[in-house]
Image (cartoon, rainbow, N blue to C red; front, side, top):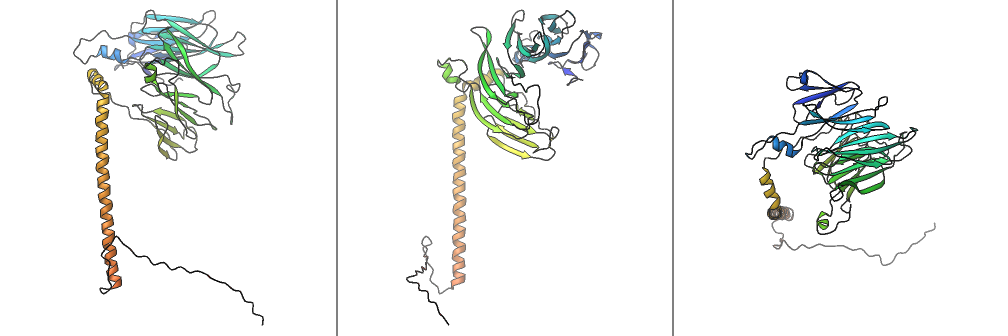
Length: 427
C-alpha cells in the first residue's frame, strides 16, 4: 500500500486515492461522494500527484485588494503508466474536475518513474529510470514540463548516472539532484559508504533551457533539503551507520557582485559550514527558513536519539539527547498579515529599518552595560563595608584602622638558605 493513502488537492476540495494498476478515485469534500459518480479508469496506473497552486493562483481566486476575482486555475494531476505489451510508458497531465487531457509524453525502456512538482506549480519533473536493451545497466532522464507556457513544452535532461534524490528550489527555477555511479549502489551493507555527486541546475532564460550550475563531486550526501525561502540548501547523509554529515550551502552568496557585471555561471554557490549529527534520520527546515532541525529517531535505531537545531550557516544552537526520542516537527508558520503593497514598502525601506533597529540595539546594550556596572559597584561597596566591620570586630576599638580603603599593606616573609652542611655522626 502506497503512503500517503489519501492525497489532497491543493484547494482542499478533493481527496484522491489510487488502486494500483486500475484507477484513481477522487472524492468530493465534505460529502466524500465519488466525484462524477465514477473513478478515473486508467489501466496500469502506478502513481499520481496533484499540481500545487501557486501564490498568484490563490490571489487570482481570492483577491484581497478589492479587485474582482479572476477565473481560478483548474486543478491538475499527473500520473504515469508503465509499458504494457506494445504500448510505451506514458506520463499524462489531466485537468480536474473537467477530466481533460492536457498533455501526454510517451517513454521507452522505462524501469521506474517519480513525479516531482515545483511548489508553485510552474514545473513538473518526471525522473525516469531507464534500462538498456540488455537490461544490465540503468541510467536516468529528467523530463521537465513547463506548466506556465503554451502547450506545456517538455525539456529532457539526460544523465549517465543513477539519480538518488531530486528536489526543486521553493518558489524558484533551480533544482538539485544527488547521483551516483558507485558499483555498491545496489548492494548496500554495513560499513559501505556510497560515493555521490550533487549537481545544481538553473533555467537559463537566454537559451530557454535548464543548464548545469555546478557539480559537487565525491560526496556522501544522499538527501537534499531546500530552505522554504529558497537560496539556502542543506546536503545531508541520512540513514547511514558510518556517515552523518551536513553541508550548508548558499546559492546566491555573491549575488550583488553578479548584478554589477559578474556573469560567470555558478559562481554564487558557496559552502557556509559543515557539521555532523551522529545517526541522523530526519532533516527539516523551520517555516521561516532561519533554522534547521536534525533528529535521530528511535523508530530507526536506538543510538543517541534526540534532536539538534542549527542556524542557516551550520552553527549548532541546541542539542538534546533524549532516550526513546521519536519525532521532531515544526509548528506551521501562519501567513503574513501584511498586504502585498505593504510588503513591497518594507522591502524598499529595509535599509532604513535596519539602521533604526541597530540604533535601538545599541541603546539597549548601553542600558544593560550601565545596569551591570552599577550592580558591580554595589557589590564592591557591600564587600568593603563588610570587611571594615570584620576588622573592627577582630582588632578591637583601639587598633588604628586605615581610612584609605584603596590601600592595603601585605607583609611577606621570605626565608633564604645561605649555607647547608651535612654531618655524619658515627657511634
